[in-house]
Length: 165
Image (cartoon, rainbow, N blue to C red; front, top):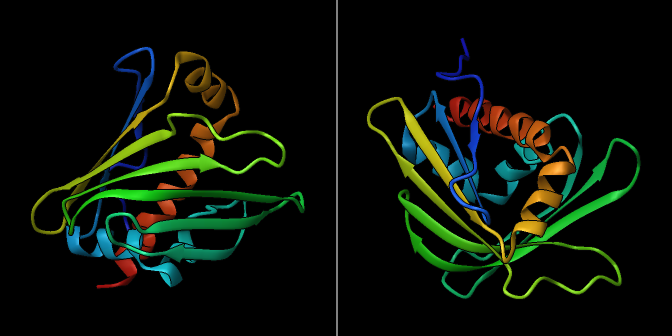
């Protein structure tokens, strides 16, 4: 039986430019990390209920790039990409994240995401600290309704990680 230890992530705002997202998973840390870093597994959870992931590219090394693309349920494409800045397998990943918009310049500096995986046994805690270049961008992202999509994605990640047992 699949269950989640905590059905929802908690989103807080530690500063004017940051979001902190925390969530507990009902799977060992190495399986959550595997589901988070394996392209064919990312395709199963990243879109949540909001579409179909058509591409998940991961070059998991410092300086390597990542890019995820989905066709949303409305028929439009949504894509993000970034660069890995720090990797400690199964413990910590720091990377940039850019929402791809045609004709819109990428933010400089880019959004910086720090994923920290902790836990023991069958439980994993994910702490995702998102640093935005300014408060206006952070607030704009919050106003898009990103939290509902993020909740769906993290729930799906939990289920995929549990399925790997």
